[in-house]
Image (cartoon, rainbow, N blue to C red; front, top):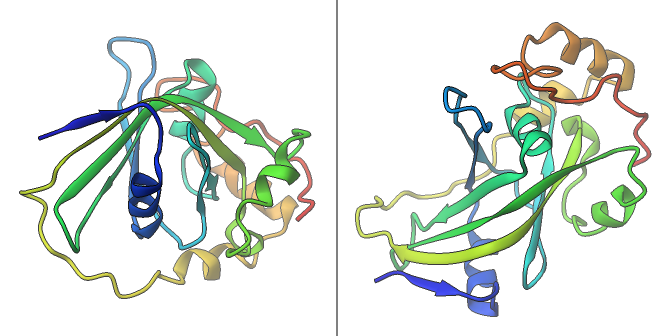
Length: 195
């Protein structure tokens, strides 16, 4: 039932871009480390850059496990599953990198997300993933669910923050600057936003 692809072709790209939700999975190298699995949403915050590269906006939150794991070892898997339409699951296994605000590539990467205003979300980084393995499988057991709309709570919560207050928020959170397993997480203070 499953198939492996050499690249993210147009059919896979169309499927990926149509999904309102995807999941990221990362883990530290240590055998006793904590595996992290995170849901990601917000329309316009994900982009297919080319046949082997995808990226998504990493917004403010109460931890930074994905960033910490990527800084340590780069391993990441992204997964999309169809809650409507044909039962399909697509996974991209690859190497990821957090591109922070002070990176010379940040502005060019941000241009790939024209349909979302990152300002009210406390944008911390852009996660860039190079696909090493692309697979699809059946989603026969995935239930039908209906997408209504994105929640506006994230934007409402973080729109009231500026760079200084966002930095204070992150420093108060136990697992933003350092991961659950003690790995370096989000580098603080945040570089000033230029978007």
